[in-house]
Image (cartoon, rainbow, N blue to C red; front, side):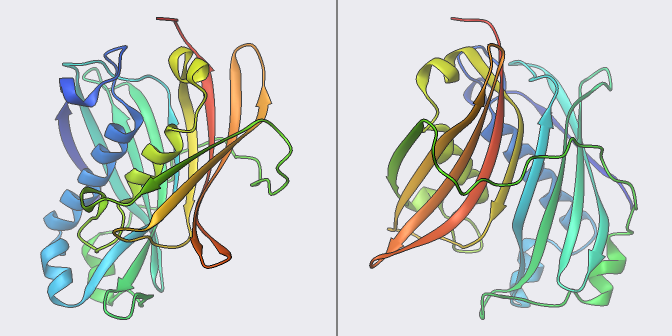
Length: 255
């Protein structure tokens, strides 16, 4: 097996006020396809956990060309394009029912020793099971993350709920995206859609912790706006950065 494909139908509970698939739901599709791929090659979640291992997401980069609507059927293709030591690169294409590319993504995953919570070298038999396909999706480069906060900012605070926790006993990666979306100004959220996203996950968070999501406007034109995002927690007087992200938003119709 090389490339793996899974089909989805867009449901009512996965769409926004435009009846278009939300970004968190799209990310859920990508992650579900990656999990199904691992199950298909014989190294799914249960088998890995029995051995004390698991995959954790380190980085996403995603471009959305067109958001599917409620009732649409789409296909997600994924494959492992590279694997070295304790990390693997995974690519994604999202196709319409007519086989048009409507989104694409690449990602970096870390193979983790769950007991030690540390990276572990990927066993040779697992690398071989995926049958690497050295083909990369073509994404536009992002600007570097900006640590100079001088623009218009928004901030929200959250408490990690039980429903935020995944099979690795920490907050699921999609929850970070939901948090940063809450910091987007309402006028932008109602009139624009994310056209591209990049996220780097740096530290894990767990049940009961207080999380701060911070967004800063970096550049804005009549048709497009770009934000930097930071998600962090407090440990005493120290701020611990959990994730950094960048989003580009493109104008669309007004409700």
